[in-house]
Length: 297
Image (tube, rainbow, N blue to C red; front, side, top):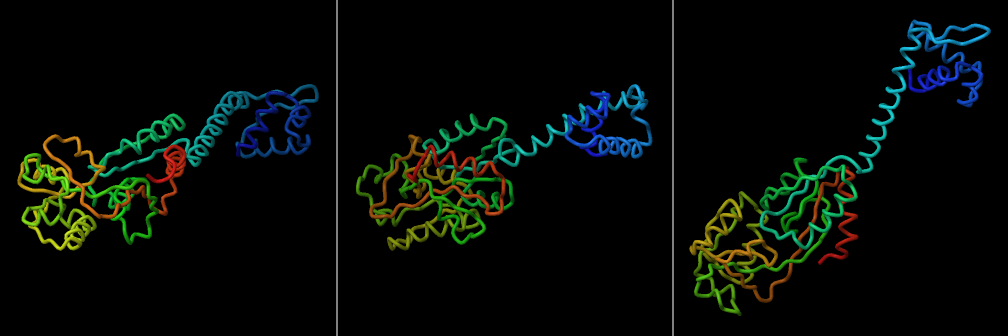
């Protein structure tokens, strides 16, 4: 028994006339009668009592008539729910952000509009380290990540969109002798110990730091740590200095100061997702992002 047959049966049961039901269904009366006979054969039970004067439901037909419309309605609701999910109106969106990045300019206005437009999409958000973000993206634990573009080089399986520029800075303890020097050069810090992520935690981040040292021809001592929180910790305690950016949430920390690195090119913050992730909520989020934020900042 299929849902078309259910529709035929309920229409006949409502009209109690094959002729009237056939008109409502836009099929011929003999074709409708055959469909009902097929249903009765499949169910191995009579559904109607046929006579020249009237058409009546059997007790079994009454039970089906009382139950099947609810089943048909539930089926239609399920189909609509599945269709909405494919359109992105329901489902989930898992967002991952770089642990130290200040998202205030980028994410809150977009997320607010997104939840207003698509209230049935369940949004989750978490912060992760530079190395952990692409790993979780590849393992399908996240749908969309916000991170530094240089951390995603040579990953053709990812789609990447530049969304904001950032500048590299030096983070120093507040009481460091060079903390107030306005024209600070990296060469001024050649005898300092730099706290930085280990290559195990982020090979790309480590390579980027090494490229800066190479650019300025300095070879300082390194203290390798496993998180940006620990980088900040070593700077706060006055033991180390570190590389950071002008877009970091650490800038609100009163125990450290930031100084720009002169003549250094800007880099891109990016939104990225897997090429083969067909979650429609991603495109809905990105569409709103473009509408609200406009061109990359």
